[in-house]
Amino acid sequence: MHVEDLLRLESLDLTLLWGDRPQLTREITGVTATDLEDPGRFLQRGELVLSGLVWWAPADDEAKAERFVAALEEAGAVALLAGEETHGGVPEVLVEACRRHGIAILSVPVHTSFRAVTDTVYLRQWGDLSRRPAAPYALPENVRAELSRLLADGTDPDTLLTRSVAHLGTPPAYVLSATGRTIARTPTAPPLPARRAAEAVTATTTLSVDPDASVYAQWHLHLPEPVGTPPRMLHEIAEVLAQHRRATLRRETAARGRATDLLALIDALSSAAAPAALGRVLEACGLADQDPYTVITVKGAADNDGTVDALTEALHHLTDCGFAVGRLPTAEPGEATAVIGTRTRTAAGTDGGGGAIATTLKNLWPTLQSRNAKVPLHGGISTPAATPQTLKGALTQARYALTAASSRRAPGTEAPTSNLAAIEDLTTLDALLTGIPADVRTAFGIHALGPLADDTNPSHRMLLETLDVFLTHNGSWARTAEALHLHVNTVHYRIQRVEMLTGRDLARLDHKLDLKAALLCR
Image 1 (tube, one colour):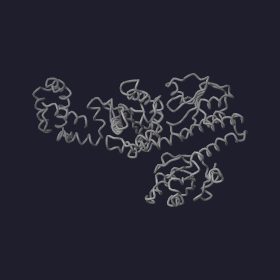
Image 2 (cartoon, rainbow, N blue to C red):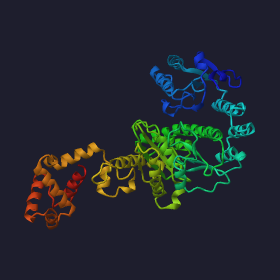
Image 3 (cartoon, helix red, strand yellow):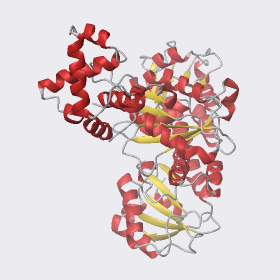
């Protein structure tokens, strides 16, 4: 379907505001509705963008419209359909921005719903499946026609998979996620344990449903038994499943926009009382009355756009838990955050389900990480927030735990001891300090140790070693002397030198803790 096809439909009553022949003949691959100021990260190439223009106000400068349209161009959008309802028309500055960036812009009248536009596009695409000539295709025409109807009706993946392979005798078949979740299976396919399913994803009898998706968002068609089916037929079945998958991704993309709004609102909370808007946004995300809430923040590579997909896939393993995944406006590149509704988990433990969530995700993390071993995925999990009003604190906890997971190092190595940390894991001084940003830790160590921080001085290195052993042995002169093979008087002398250089009294517990923390921060 092309952009110009929409203009020919009287039922939609769209008006072309700007667009030349090259723009109007672009093929539409999908539709995304958004009112984000910068929707680029949620768009896929070839998509039609629907916007009610809630993000724009008459008082805004021209640059705001320019940034919005530039994001569409960069993402490869084919056209913008702007709703007239919010402002009584489409702002001229937006039309001019589309003209400059070569993006066709059409106005949507008040009496035409965005749902009508979306349904028109996808019904046309699904209909094309059954109208293809039979010769180039391996699937029988009647099968393609049936699958086209099922797609149009929004059938569930189990039914779609079963009908896709019915003409083959309904052999055992699965649709598996990147980490081995069973998304669909035929009646002849027994339940597949998660560990075996994760291994099956990489089997030679498994076909990727949507190779263009990120490694974390892909679905896989798995037939555990050989059926003698022509590979072309399996690829056509995979393409049918891919259409269903893309519809799922479109819904997830819309949900991510709402989640991003929720996270921005949480991050902006400045008092104990949550604004009334927080309740409405939680409801829009399907999380109203789902307290207690757990927050998780995950970070991948700075240029990795799959972090949101990775977190979404991980959270799908939390059965009976609602969640909203998005990005904080202030987040670093490659960072994603989610709010998880945990009310249904309260029966599992006294922590409101937070411990069960952390355990499930920690068990899953090695499998998730293995899907792209070159990109480390670090994550931090908060303790449960009892009410929406305490979500700001949970967000702070999750980001602190993320820093801890990214900073922890196994002794004598440069590798992290774990890529996922929960606040409940930070039960030691060492663990607590790993959550402090590296530059803050370094500054504290330098100032607390004073001249001893200069370990290029051999004398200072010797004193630091003595201090470390002395504190490790709980201030025991005899055990420190034994460990260092020194006379006790020598230990006394060295500790006195440490006290003089640092200004600390190691007979005091608080001063011992200060210096122990300083050593851990080095």
